[in-house]
Length: 453
RNA sequence: GUGAAUGUAGCUCAGCUGGUUAGAGCGUCGGAUUGUGGAUCCGAAGGUCGUGGGUUCAAGCCCCAUCUUUCACCCCA
Image (cartoon, rainbow, N blue to C red; front, side, top):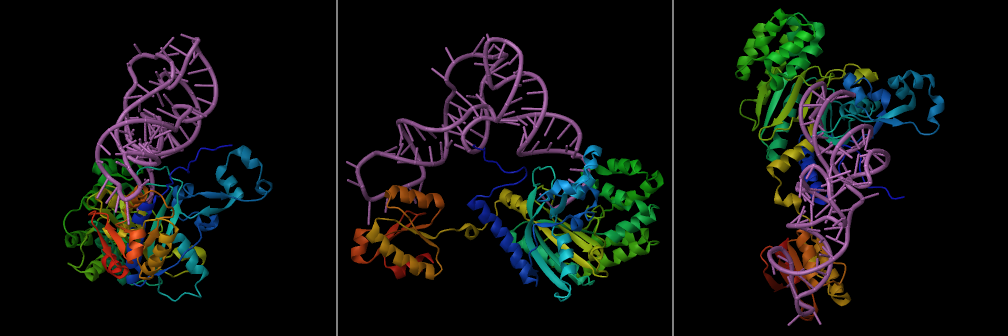
């Protein structure tokens, strides 16, 4: 039976050119990670559901891909659950594994499991795919890559600072103009405290996070529907609409949140980080944005988000400090801070701006035309030498018409073609054709190597 | 998860109020006196009109279901 070829919703194939472009992004990010002293690790695509569940909030649990147990999985399940339609509990009995939703939670699990083999502070980076059962949209896929860097086991705000410098370096190398936004969960807590709703922190942050998108009136409406009274909403207003430079914002906040110890701590942290980063050390802009909340509820301190200045596509990088993520795995008192580059969105941005350097897309440098067995032998000898010199070389595998062989080189974007036929064999030379200009000349193998390398 | 739009050759799309063998451009493959690509000309292949039902003498076009993609919400990279 023939099946129509298809891939699951929200997943993609990548052609050679696309893969080359993506690798350019991964390599750039990875290079910068290493430059700042991060070491790469890998973790499995699947984790135990017990590791994943409950770490991303209720929404997150729904978006987890679950893996059906193998073997006779029905015998262990409680049949009455089928009838009751309690899918959550039924799923728990049918599945014990799930695909990872991000790289941070598996990393926390990794740290706890390997705590005796790790020297702290531990700086790790990780570039791997993650999966979310979200409904796909533009810039939103069910399988996508995250490029994470985290520092765990250090409270120092130097770490936040280094991450900001690293974000700046990555986007400078990629040539993308970005705006880095920073906030602090402690400030958000302080705000909730100050207006008298410390228990409604999540509702408040979710609402003010939308300020950019839906405007003040709608934010207020949402707050109101969540049970926040008008007086509190009025108090919130000057905070979320706060304008001006970072110093000004901090000064205002200091006055507003004076009564909240947590809030003051958050302000202090932001101030320290800004001071360490310095005024003119970034190519990106770095602004305090009090409406930045970020959904992931494990963040406890500084939070960051990066937006491209020239393309509208949601955030392309995000991160923050999480004080006790390893606590749920039985290891308390370890603080971490990390960022995650969204490679797939960066890819979309780079495509729109067409910012790939020519050499990142380079493939085969030179191709030898095939004229038959005798000529190929000679070409193989030349090719071996070129490859030794690190030049990517290929031989056309069949003695096809020259037109076809040239067409192949052209389609593949190979810049040089070497012709070794009867005449060249006799004289011990090679005819080298520059595909861009169309010029060709007789050269020796040494001259050829010199020209194309 | 909620609401909406979309689906015709590999790609981008035509296809009138339902009416004979469903078209174009690009791409692919082959050719234009056998050692030369990207231009031009000639020719060919390629579609169970997303899938499954239904209405009709007749369906690419109408109805229902389902899947895909896209958009908004939710949430997020």
